[in-house]
Length: 320
Image 1: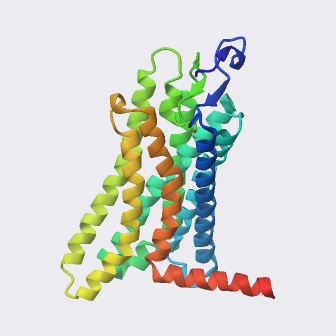
Image 2 (image 1 turned 60 degrees about the horizontal axis):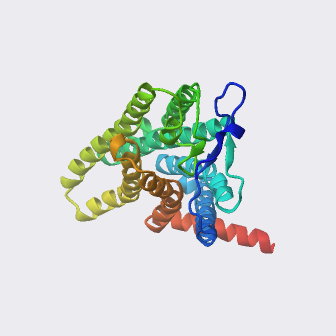
């Protein structure tokens, strides 16, 4: 049922408050989903925080690959925190409303962290390319300064895109309905509530998605094309296995992240459906951030050893 927007507008007749649509009218289903998402959220926060802490406290992991992994873990923590707490509140309370300013803030941080992750995954692919294809020059070409600059560029691109897109969308008027057919302030469902012709805004969102999703992805594809060519000419089977094993976790994370993002933002508008959009959004806001630390810890002996050392220190300090 759509909400009466007269209570959500000021004298300019532009909607100043929104409300998220209900997941379900069945209270038991909402509480079940609340419990499931809460557990996954807490597991995601714990896993990503442990990965970042293990890398920070273990000198053996102070290398470019793990520097980027720590950045990725911090991004995932912010990414989930920008969306899930409000989603959980909407599931179990009548407080499903969000102000125009709050919605803009949520959109800004979600876009900032999502675009930054796209760029950071490309930086991680570049790191693997240099390590495998140019090992003799790796230490000089992927120095600490270079890593910091690549991370800053990733965050900077995310900030520029998030600020411009959020400002562009919220400069529009919203005449109603005031109910967002989603569980957070994502760009397409907010645009659907704007007054008048929004084709230019939709085109801008699509172009930004093309540039910020496809461009890093093409860099990743190019890097792994070079990596595969280098691995195939390695004389040692053990060397080939070791080279591929250092890339497998990153490739799996890239597949999960880019797969869901591409289907969400790069498919034609005519093929969008609120139900499918919500399902995909649940996957990349809840499931993927939970899987990333599991993928990196299960498939990486150095990370597992560092986690054991970190957890061991915690236990000793607690008992001490």
